[in-house]
Amino acid sequence: MQPTKILLIEDEEAIASELAEFLGRHGMETVWFSSYENIEKNLGDAKADLLLLDQFVDGRDALTLLPEIRSVYDGGIVFLTGNEEAVDRIVALESGADDFVMKSLGPRELLARLRAVLRRTREDEDAHPGHHDHRVHADQGGAGNWSIDLNRQEVLAPDGVALRLTYTEFQLLTYLIRHGSRVVTRDEVSREVLHRDFTPTDRAVDNLVSRIRTAVEPHANGDSVIRSVRGQGYIFIGQHVPLDGESGSLRAPS
Image 1 (cartoon, rainbow, N blue to C red):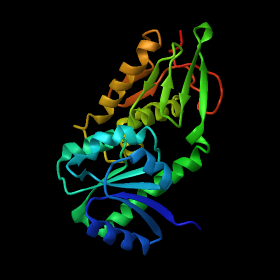
Image 2: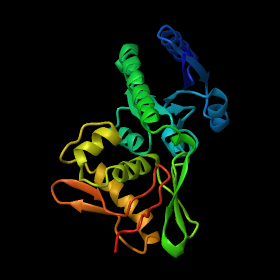
Image 3: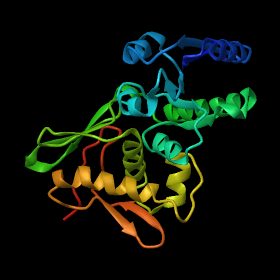
Image 4: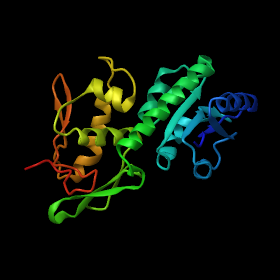
């Protein structure tokens, strides 16, 4: 069996060396870079199973690079940081990171959390084989076709406009579509999409739904595609969207 490959970006060589040695003892091969320069090329060359990213390298906050990274990479992403700001953790998770790990937690917990992210990403690949390079289309009568590109995390409207959602927005939209026959609770979305526990004051799910509506509905004749169910959650009410090659539509049924 091929070892798991980790791409590590860390500007302190001593920390990188210690991490590489520790992860290597547990079947993880580490490819190390000391900066975020040429990140897209490095991603392609490394063919990594998971990215382990130091948040601050040479004074640069990697959170600002996360949308760019997510546009070309759909594997696991874990931030490693000394930053205790809760808002940065929330921004990271909502922008497409899978975990946000404090350096103070130690190598054993880091290993456990890396393995948890790897399990989730591999389970998603097994549940949806071929999704990394699969484009599917939705029929919208004479107005042209919608298409959902599961690799680029892109919704292409009939007018040719590419609705580039964030990684988390795209994951939530496709999750709602796959469960379109029932209400999906906020607690469920928090667990299955955001990979964290839900609290009554947590507005992350509501904010994600609002952003999806803002992006999609102007291209769906103004129709609503996601309905709020008071006290419960959300349900996708558009016509069936083909995530496995069938025809369908993002428009709400007339």
